[in-house]
Length: 457
Image (cartoon, rainbow, N blue to C red; front, side, top):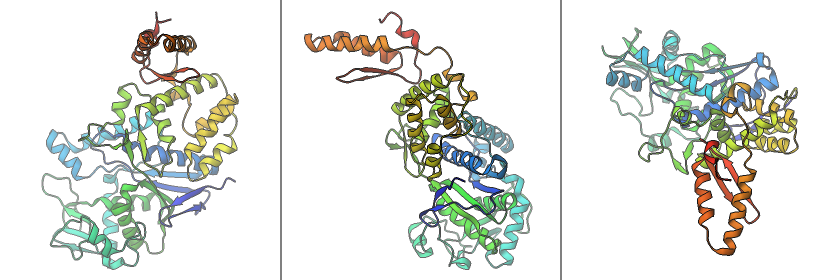
């Protein structure tokens, strides 16, 4: 059997993956807060852990892997969106949940085994909070219930590698008079008449953010499971707090054995933000005509633990590569299994860039069946994602030869007017023009329109 090695954030090292039960490999990943469209950064952990889900199914069997990813559908951001829009909270969360599923499906993400919503697990959260109080790890104060960090000081900080004192010194924590320690975090908070709320032993209220994942993972995966994942922005405080409350509520369990965190996303070398004007959603890209398969391919070219830079150039190259691969694999049946070199790359801490490099080798060798099998393991080249690439493959060789000849002539006459005219026309048609001393390459990009090439030869 293939040995999977994963970088465990908790141990800060790459470890051989050994599931608790090979017949039921269990993974939990923190999902979205559903109040708006998912931006491009939200999609990265979805794709990363979708690849891991596919790899686990490949190694252990599809029926032996359980994957849970939650929806946070009770949150102050959702309350604010409802207040400003005048719409019902349930209407907003139902709509945005479906948006998320549609957009992630367009990126080729399989649906997890379980997709629990926080509001479905309020009784389990209340029971866990009550148990934490009984065990001396939480306390009620002014309608709130807070986790007492001092009650588990020996374990708190093991994921992020920081002491409680260092966290207090460096963290922005909510100052409240009812807290015994600045680092204590909310498990339950009171709701007013305008806010969603549920009855509890501490009055009408709603859960804090961290408790939902502990309650849902416990209910669906047990007190000990294999993998917990998410973006590295969740490592502290969210995942740190999950560990504290879960281990204190279930002292005989391990909670999660392996912790995986993906790095953040950039756009054209800069952090994505509305202030920089480079903030966009997955739907924005899809509506612009960028195929979901292209977005996925760009993501997979960067290792999940490295920052990923989204650029238009990368998208254009990805589209050109996928068009060539789809042309090569058209009408072909895949091999029974992906090539060992592809599987081995993925098994080495999800080295998707290495797996794609192996796919380039398969394409160069003309191994269409092997290429297709490898692509499908990575969530690429599937029939249901290929509508964007259907249609005749455009032969650009004549145009490449024409531009090269014009460039050669211009080098002699020093008159580059014809070169500039052709380059402008090709760019307008959606082609990336690559020129060198030895030749010209025209690469179709997003929005390529072959009709605009008519009359140029």
